[in-house]
Image 1: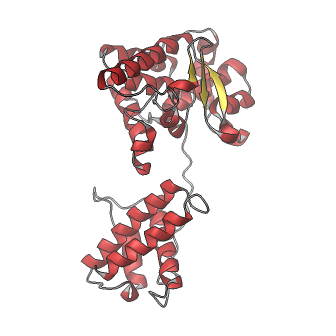
Image 2 (image 1 turned 90 degrees about the vertical axis):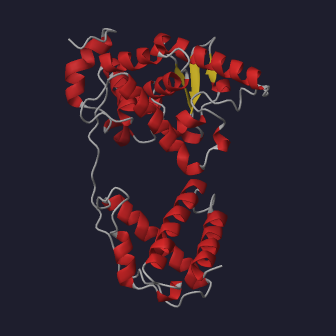
Length: 312
């Protein structure tokens, strides 16, 4: 085993132990990926041991282009610096290195707040209807339905059949302080019914047990079977495919735009930021307010209050 392989193993073991205490398990896994990339970068640069790493090498890694060849964004550079700094703290504590080569390094913080680009009412309607073009696909419509009710990516991934009450037309979302029960709109009720029926039939065909507390509403398999770093990208990809399938290509529209539509629709009907925070499980009213697009409210508020979805 090379010194780099040994260093990677010991550092990742330390981060895994810290998971659930100072570091979430998903963050620990992400840190391991980034430090693994640094180890390969160092070896490719002719650096044989962690002790031989210089500040200049760390600086080059932090600024190294992505796989597509474009420069890294500030957030990526900050993550790289955070990871290798943490790694060298671990290696220093173990006596593997004598000094931290990242001490003098920093990445300028730049706040680039996203301007909300919520779907229009017609786009939201098209997104719901597009799933029926392929009658076998219940996954993307269900993912879309949850996002249109204000569920975040992690909540979409964590939603299970048990959380959905067809009788009460409600869905339990979130956990802890963000736990809430939201009403399922009539146009989305059938989407979730079909998803539950499809999941039940699929497990019956495969001879798998039916456990409503584990069977997912918006994933292809149980959440625990996914690598921690693939969950959010999987949900985002399903939403992106649904948007493309619905023919929604407007500039600025992203998977987040579906949830932003939910926020703006709630505000349009209630005129209360508190209601937006409650629906989306957002702990801060300031955060909820940042999801509201004033131009959207002026253009579409009356349409939503009237229960319509015409693009005019």
